[in-house]
Length: 65
Image 1 (tube, rainbow, N blue to C red):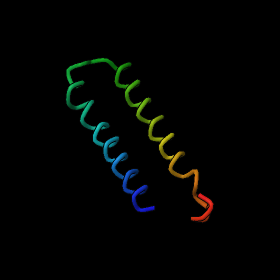
Image 2: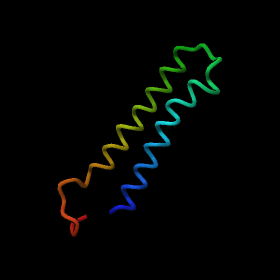
Image 3: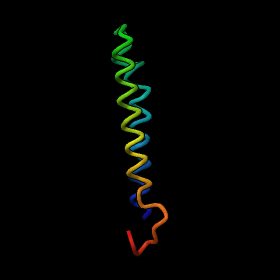
């Protein structure tokens, strides 16, 4: 189970870095409110889906999963 948790931890670190690096890095000079809204909306959907996938097995015993 530790390996699965480690992969999820790295995935969330990647998402967090993207959340900061893209808007304040390569997309800094683009002055589009719609673009930033679309970026953060899509990132939010990715985080919500990732959380749902990660927690789908909660409450099940180790033998059932």
